[in-house]
Picture: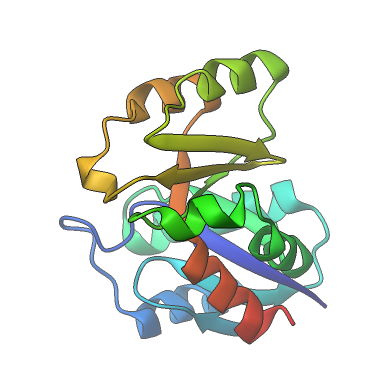
Length: 179
């Protein structure tokens, strides 16, 4: 069995409300083992014999659409990938410490092309630092994310949709489940 973390986009926003017990139940109905949810923002840890990430993602998205009645984009990472993401330091430690904002990670569906990377990274400013490693966009805002003037729509246009978590959340998931 391999450990995976499914990061779900758009959970518990607006009319899309689901309790952690219900979300775990949806994953268990799909045949996954060792299912655990972390916080109420769509982070699900589970085990599966399936090795194909594409197949797992398709199974989860189809199962959640049927069970919940709406589409839920899934950004899947192995336990080892989550541990590696949590260990990354894309910005100088002193810049992170000096920031009033929290380091954000946007998990993407696929690794961006060189052209897409260039387009997205060109949107960085002194107030909003950006880095891309693998299938993750790292963003260090100088303040709160809602106060930022970073053009999120332009980033999504360049990189495709993703789902965002704080580095702290990813670190906690990694420490609790991926150690």
